[in-house]
Image (cartoon, rainbow, N blue to C red; front, side, top):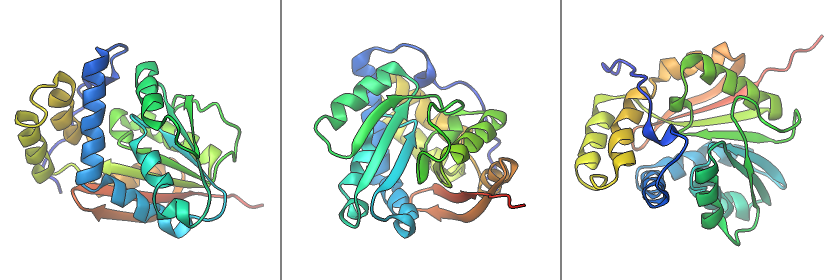
Length: 234
């Protein structure tokens, strides 16, 4: 038990418009969390058993596209050609991602809502939802997982672990490194309170009809769930 109740107050980054400089700095903070606090490594480890030639990956809620860039530059790319479609529903965030990936091979950007993906069934081999699920209430989180399973047989959820330690760490960052940015200062600690315990994340996957292959805690305070679409046979 985390001892922290889940809180569903709105995050400021989900608002329709932002000061571009403030948004860019906040997305850089998120990328820094992924880099220094284990988000990149957790995703690489989750995908490693499944990579192969021509792997097609959909990244939902890509933010600054830091994780797609990490993947195409990592062992996943070296061991087999990787093609990633990085999506976000927020036009300003998508514009920030476009600037970040300019010139990067293997990544294409697209506007998309996690609840209504503009892709045909089976278009991808794997779907990534990294730091996306905690932006949704339970009903929409289940819908997002079902929609991910419609377009790919493999789903990887890379999320925050809702613990007192993680919350304390986010409060410390909000008071120091994130202090000058109103988005990250507010949303960083709130993101932890909106996040999950392992049992909650498993329940969401099962409610979406997915088979949980793996659910692991990763450094630092990350939860990684790997799940498969269940194929019904006659």
